[in-house]
Image 1 (tube, rainbow, N blue to C red):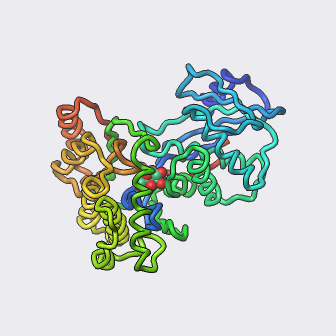
Image 2: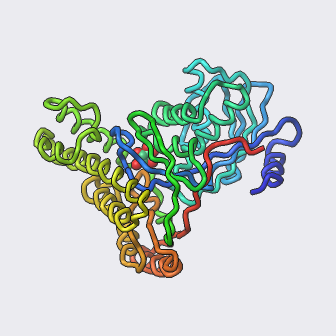
Image 3: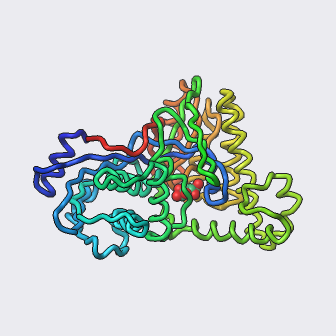
Length: 387
Ligand code: GLA
């Protein structure tokens, strides 16, 4: 939607006039470093050029009135600044959650808003919830002049997700949504929040995102359970080792000490975390050296580890990855994001992308009965005011 369409959608929902502003925050794709942002590891995501747009006008009372262009049948959903409580599974929980965290931190949102949201992130699994938190944080900072950096906005979004929504995620998604940069991936140390932008110039290759159209539901899935398994593995290791996060261990240290982890399942989860950290560091180096063969191989290893050690995939994703890897000109392919569905990311030689699209779509349909969506990744900027 362009600005005129957004404004006319807003006017239709709430009436026109007054000081109407627009904000945008993107979704993300993670290239490598999966399920280690809550284990003190490094991750390598980038922001999409699609995301959530919020068109907003401040109100004189304390009502929050929200309308989604994606769910028009729901109509205007009403809430109040005096009742910041999570209700049902409504998307407005993300709006309330961010305000709730700001209040807790002493930043007061005194007046309500009319909020019109339009989202264009394809399918599920590309962090539309993080994009919602970041767009709301960006807009509140702008209206109230809160002294917040984009990194603060990311941390507030994560806190809203953890403490208000109940999803124990790490910082990766909100960070990518707030700090994304066009054409660049972010090499982020989730233990310190130090980061480095890495240009995504893959000579002769494209990064292809494929949506399995198998929805995943993170909270109801095993995400929080995986996190607990990692914590259990860590506390077993801490009986003998002075470490505060799984990703502080090298693979060699892990191998020498893994018998300390009593539960074999927890040992497998910890193995994923330790080796994924090692792979991520190597993958970023390989990409910087334009060594796409190594980069792709590490993506494959990451995908296999997610499948076999972390048990975070599903039959549809496994089929998609298997079919992708059979194609000519594919350097690597794996599940990306929270897991148990969602999307894959593949590195594909430019002249093979069209055949990849055709063949993978066809084979995936035959194997699962589902239609996947295949598109080339375009990396955009992080959260901002757009008008
Ligand atoms: C979800 C979470 C992130 C991260 C990924 C897995 O997207 O929100 O914090 O843990 O899963 O890498």
